[in-house]
Image 1 (cartoon, rainbow, N blue to C red):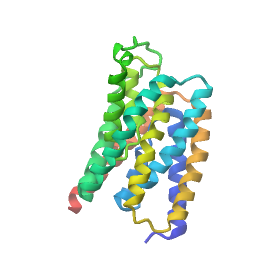
Image 2 (image 1 turned 90 degrees about the horizontal axis):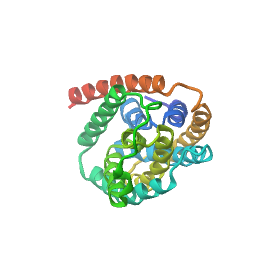
Image 3 (image 1 turned 60 degrees about the horizontal axis):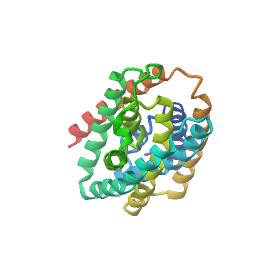
Image 4 (image 1 turned 45 degrees about the horizontal axis):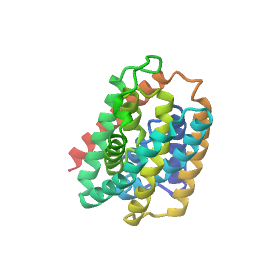
Length: 258
């Protein structure tokens, strides 16, 4: 039985650590719902409500920091966000309609695939890639924002885990890709927060929100300040290994429990 004090401590520590990682690399936010659902055994909708609240806060602070350091493409971010807003609404509605087992299964599978993609992805921070002509077509960028938002809102992945590698592969510098993705994660989070809190049955709601916000704010501020001081490739590899092991374990436990 987890006491309220222990629950508060776990939530604040989880958000603090993941906030730091998110500020440095733009990824790892997808680990939050994994902790809430897997470690704390919270209902799926409760977990996603708290997770997207953290994504919104970390996205605002992180995006502002990357904008100040001139690592932001505002036009590209706006076009992606135009598609992401309705995409996030659709993703939440799909999640609400499916069973808890299916929602957990999708979450764990997506997190596992995300970890594998990070592990197998080559480090392109110093390798320049020509900017894709796809990014010159507004409709295609909006469509990209819509599709990624549906997946992220449905699974609780946040946003950057999909958008960062996609943008980098299309020729966007990795630092700008992180900044754009953090801003886009705010747009995905807004309808997700509304949708999941409407279906949540949170106990100690105020306490959990305070713990979540406090940990996230401290973590993301720390992470953005460390962003240029830590080799991003090594950081990603560490996140990938933790992600793969934890999601694989939760998949096994879910199938055994069913």
